[in-house]
Image (tube, rainbow, N blue to C red):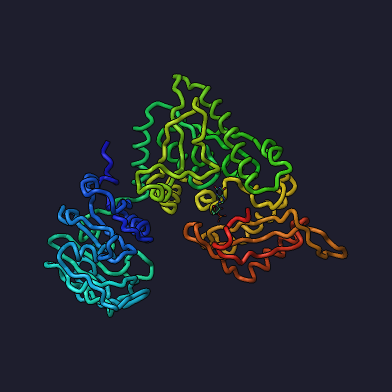
Length: 525
Ligand code: XMP
């Protein structure tokens, strides 16, 4: 099958930069498909992908360190347009006969670049002075033959070069970071003007392409999908539904640990918007009994994971056992694996890391399915765009990350129906007020934690109360690996605190967690 959108990918050769994924995202923001590949990939393998362009990323090394990741000059001779960034720029200069030296003029952070030619391929349409983000010790002191030097900075005489004939370009700075004012323009100029690529990678085209792909993969077989109510599984299911309609059956295990309104969102809104065939398993009682008397966080996680697999297994058996009119078996399982899971675990081709709780890969032998992973090439924000394109309800598309074990790990102490009701009520108030304040998308997530095993004394009306504290844990983050506590406005915090203590009888204290991660984690358990 032709695969037009991904036919000529822009390959970002990763020299160990923390920015390689960011570069790929920026290329995609320019509506051109891009993937990250490790620098150890042999040249033939890279070229076999028929890349539309190559971007050599930054990296932590100095080009003449003995363990510096090498750049095979053959890659530069293959006639594929190349952009070198930071380390990639220096490696390119060296490989093409230029000079890289330790000048003693290190530059870290924001610097001003003097652009010498504002009509050049990279800098067309930009100002002659621009803020750029630098991070280098070495510098290119002599550009390779044939390269025009198109920008300088205080610390780097050769801060950018271009060779339109050979379609080779480079910048010493990081155009992919926000702090480089014209960074995205530089990247787009390289892609469109330098490499002659067409911006066709749009959510609409991604949907069309995936739909065609899924149809081809699945044929007449039937497909199963575990819906969690989160963005990834919902968008994956909606895509597969669009491709193969009622050959897909979704299973939603209601474990009773979701937040207020979330089960309904899946059972009603999602079904209405996408038309998926949904089997809802009401396992609320079952999870509560299994969790009875358990306070240890790891124990809770294990129990929830185990029960989930068991319930899903049974539902899968029921669906698999019910042949459709033509007797087609269930052969596939949809999984909402995203691109970052794929790259982190082996550079684009490795098996994906699937998060513990929703890992339904651990099914018994008679329930082994082939996987359909329609989001495997997408970043989270792209998944959201695709979701919107498919008409997935906004409440689901913009849902903040929520852990698989749900409220079960936000009740410190034993999980009971009463405690769940208290936490749900407090959490609903927080979510409502954050939305009202327009802060939903600014905040990564805001767990509300019920300290169910702790009591605090309070006074309300004319009597003493002996209630429980809740903790607000609003955090800002890029990827949940690190996080900082969000500086929410005092007025908002005051309103939330008032409402919770007034409307949720069992809670008489609202506290704010002001710990970053590390040392704290985002969740409390
Ligand atoms: P921590 O608490 O480790 O959380 O800083 C990082 C991110 O992961 C989410 N999280 C989980 N997600 N199953 C999940 O699917 C889990 O057991 C789990 N524990 C934490 C958490 O909400 C945050 O986004």
